[in-house]
Image (tube, rainbow, N blue to C red):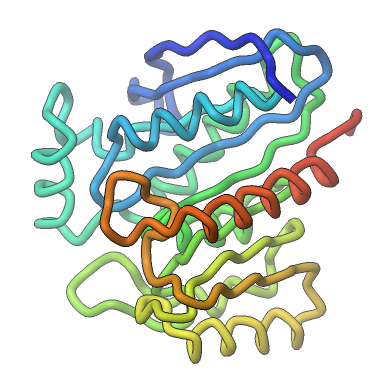
Length: 245
């Protein structure tokens, strides 16, 4: 599917009445699902905005909140990421609040079918799972999110194992077998826990791929793996975000 799209930077009031920056891309199709894109730890960058546009080109409304905007308004992506890193990253309650506000923004669009999914990469993968365990969503995608089943010292990235029983929607996990964060062992632990809790999920693990295999601007990029993984995303969202709620 290829749809006409419009992409723009917007500002809206989030859960705490603080105005935040976001990148929005909308399709001219009707009765469509929405996707909240959570940017990776390096920040709200051009690569992430391209992903937002990619979803709109394929028939979804999509939005990415600049999670670092509160503390670094107007700063470059690199500077904002450095400031966030110095404070341990985005707090979980803020992430959940911003994603919830972004989901509400998508549902309020005139062509929305009221279904919203979330997707995140790297730290955003963990945050995608966190959001799906904290909000009423329709689908979630975790792209190699680390620190879901264990914590990273001196950061806000703590284990969210205790939240997994609250997973509100189907989860798609996409992982590289050569990754260490998360490692295949950590992915297996997550699989075991989700099975134990009776959750709806599917994992795909790829040979010859490590962390950030989606990132076309990095040496870690694996084109064949990324193409296959995108195919899984389109199938997953096509099943869970289509039609009326």
